[in-house]
Image 1: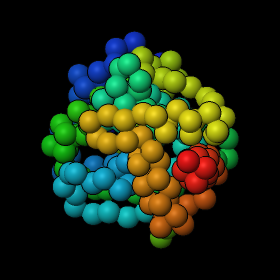
Image 2 (image 1 turned 135 degrees about the vertical axis):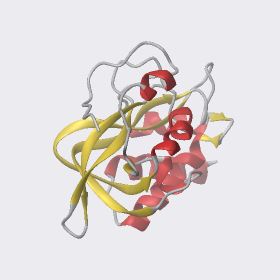
Image 3 (image 1 turned 180 degrees about the vertical axis):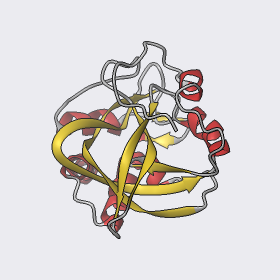
Length: 200
């Protein structure tokens, strides 16, 4: 499997065709996939095996726009992507899937996300190469950094075909707690959202 690392991202919102050309799965029976956002709790694809994993040097941030799932082109939601951060650990779920599964995943993650190959570390001390979808800074759906209060205000008013942006953040926070992951960014946005609800 050819290794790909994050770099520049094209201006087109739909990355489906680009992703299909990024890795060659010929002769490969299964591939590890790392989920760090909705892939943790919304598993709408078949998998062979599932277990917690971490990747090093990356942090989860709600800096990517969602025009097709948790928002619209007129008012995109904010969803998770990964940004480089030295010494950071990002906890998620790894799924061992067949290469055919990527036809569905490429469509699901088409709004600015590209497939990259990274090392996944498992709790038992083993590691493996896996695929991670990342929306890099500068892609066509990129919304970028903001403080957690500002992100929460944005999230509270966004919704799309997959539901409300608020529900996305709350479900992600719940799933991360179940994994034992300490994600200050996501938890801070969650706290702001719950505070807004309490004040309403």
